[in-house]
Image 1: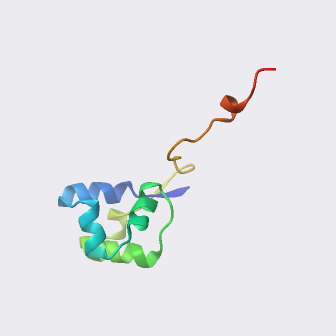
Image 2: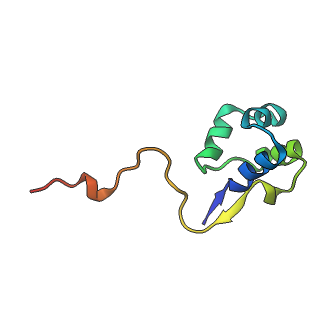
Length: 85
C-alpha cells in the first residue's frame, strides 16, 4: 500500500484553488508540491498545514491506495533492456 494524494488534487479542484495558491497559503516549497505529484512521502506537519490551509480533513488530502505507487517519468521495463543474443 502507499499514500495517494489524489484526494488533494480533487479537493483543490472543488475549492477552485491552484497548486501555487496552496503552496503560498500553506507555506509549502515547490519540492513538497513536486513530491506529492510523484506520490512521495511528506511530513505529517506538512499534511496538517495543508489541511489548515484548505479547511479540510486529512481524508480530503490523502488516501491509502493498494499496490505500489505509480512510477513517474521514464521508468524502464526490464524486458526492454534485454539484448537479443
